[in-house]
Amino acid sequence: MSLAIIGCAEVPTKRDPERKRWDILKDVCVRAIQDAGISKDDIEAVLSVNPMAQPSMALDMALGRIPETLGLKGCKDICVLNAGGASTTNCLRLAKSFLDSGWAKFVLIPHVTVQSDIPTEALINFFATAPLDPEWEYPYGVTFNGAMGLITNRYMHETGTTPEEMASVSVGLRGWAALDPMSIFHGKPVTLEDVLNSRMISTPLHSKECNFLADGGGALVVTTHEIAKEMGRPAAYELGHDMAFMGATPVLRSDVFSREAYRSSSRGALEKAGLGINDMDLRQIYGAYPYTQCSALEGYGICEIGEAGKLWASGECGPGGSLPCTTMGDATGRGHTGSGVSMAFYIDTFRQIRGDTGERQVKDCEHAIITTAGGSVMNACTTIYGRSAT
Amino acid sequence: MSEYLKPLPVIQSFSQPFWDAAKDGKLLVQKCNSCGSSIFFPRDRCPECWSEDLGWIEASGKGEIYAFSVTYEGVEKAFKEDLPIVLAWIDLPEGIRMQTNIIDCNPDDVSIGMAVEVTFKKATDDINLPYFKPVSG
Ligand SMILES: [Zn+2]
Image 1 (cartoon, each protein chain N blue to C red):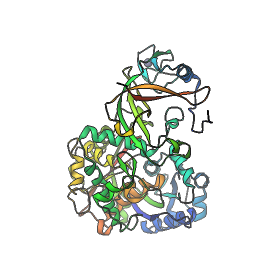
Image 2: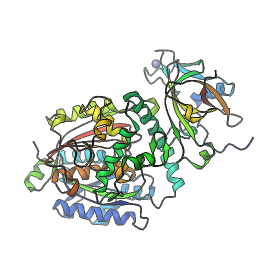
Image 3: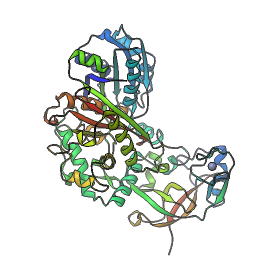
Image 4: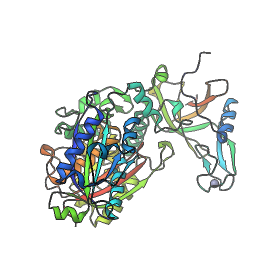
């Protein structure tokens, strides 16, 4: 099994209902295929990220409108994959199967999400009901922020992480985002005071520690290691992958902070890659809430339990630090594009390895570890990427 | 009593005994008669051993706050009059962790590890919802 990312494109994350779903979709697909240096008819499969809360677009994708609209004459089949925020991970997994079995040499993986044309009350309702149990959670006024605030509170209680340390995670993420033209917060860094003085949403989470729902879109083109090597173009080679599932409902999980899932999935992925955590030049953690940026570093084995907040507070994980983490900014820094956050994570990882991320560029980014999650952090899907196949 | 506008629990046949007891002010915990596991949420099959021989015990109603969060905004319209809402996970001595709200107290006084006890509030003629409040005294 081998997979390499050879092309990508995305649109800036923002709230703009004038930017229509199909316009974004066509734009990113065309540019990703051009970026890969192939022709449109080389694409043999289109595996799409399910767009959350947008049933019409989900149906368009599921029923084959993308290859038809784009005239992808070589396309042999399509599929839409849905695992919430981890959907892109599943597109990549299925792509690997298409590549490995020889069904396809090149696979296109598109995503689009427009939330700005959905009424706020409907969005709140979607995010309140979609991941929640209708009998035991929904009647209690649970929100994503509330559930994640509760976990953050327990994390801080157990580890002794201070509000300043936790807020410094958002400062770091917004620091990366401020340098990223693809972020809704481009040019808008925040200070510790900004975070701590922002409105309290669900204790201990301030508004600048929560997610801002936004629109976005992106696409990846992937192929086999062999073809990527022959093409001689910059590529991000997948070197190892592993995963752990914690469960759909936060209150029922024993691994409350996902720390054990980060531990086991990173160990498994690194073992397959034949690499260690200290070989990684970049750590990309998609948890959507700041505590995951801490528990992942602990689970990865980069620091002791309770030390991660101090690492973020020291500035080492942000721009200019010696331990760059989550240059993509996570949902907190980028804007939350529904199921598209992990797409943006893979694109950023590819671009970091290719070396074209401008001011955010991690020096000599040869290896990266990336963990994505779906639902309310139901799982941890960890992948190792490298600049070369071995 | 004014009409209850918030979402009601979607009750299933196998969880009906829990809600019947709640109407009488009793908190039930589901138990597996085969392996002895305490089960939450209630199921029709034990998630540990797959036995369908499940029963109920009446809980003491006491518990301890494992974690909580006070929500000030971002809830659906029907919940707005309840803000701030204290969302909490309660560890029961009967061996389960429940998600609920802490009520009848100042949210600023809530803390992890706090001793709490169950209290029921009538939602409709058929449904009493279990909440928790600090143990008095
Ligand atoms: Zn059992």
